Image (cartoon, rainbow, N blue to C red):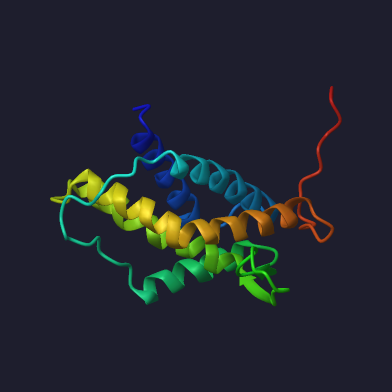
Length: 175
């Protein structure tokens, strides 16, 4: 259970559960939980083996309507959804700022991970290599970029100048 694929699978499951759950005690706690989950998920994705697909079978896709319901649920649980971003940070010319969406980022990551988890849960005919290959490819080409944007925005939401005011007050030590 300590191999990179098992660790990633467990973390992906934890992330998807957080995203699918109902309201958190407050928006700051939800944002901090998302930040912690994403940091672990990103780290473990970097350790996934570079496996090629064993077959030409593609993992099923989550329909837009289901994705949008998840995205709307996430947006309701955040104090702020939109943030400033740069699409390509290594651009030679001064890049234009874009508007990013935390709910879109978090829901897109969920959409890229969930089909593989569902196939594992039902005991799929797909090879584990197919699922790992799909997770690794989507990390490198899609959800990794969403994770980086979300991590930056979530950090700002939790600790930045415009941080969520619902942050719980910490009691002084010894009380």
